[in-house]
Picture 1 (cartoon, rainbow, N blue to C red):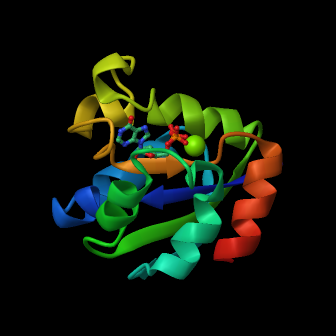
Picture 2 (cartoon, rainbow, N blue to C red):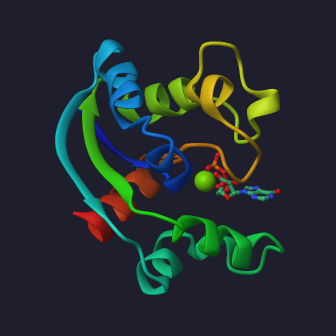
Length: 131
Ligand code: IDP
Ligand code: MG
């Protein structure tokens, strides 16, 4: 069993999509092991998004992630890291495969509904930050 981190981002929380999104992960066999809702601050986002600190979209990304609360999920399953990335779809919803969460609900490359850890190493690092 592998574990990974999912965030349901403020755009989805604002649009009352939490239940629909969690259903998609459960329908794909993932087990929800931990879950909570919280308002983010700069300190936790700086840790979570440290790889992006020098990107031009970074300040705007932090603003967006503090727009409303987020849902934080620890999920487990076989190949969970890749399974979640596949269910989420491409970062840019206009390039995401049909039936992915970002294809269905994403509004823009920034407002793309969900986060999933990129690889096993990131999953371990991120789960330590959030749980
Ligand atoms: P990922 O979430 O698919 O792993 P990353 O490249 O790690 O994508 O980017 C982190 C987050 O930053 C994205 O999910 C998205 O919300 C935002 N983002 C990424 N690229 C851009 C961009 O070019 N413009 C605006 N926001 C972006
Ligand atoms: Mg990423």
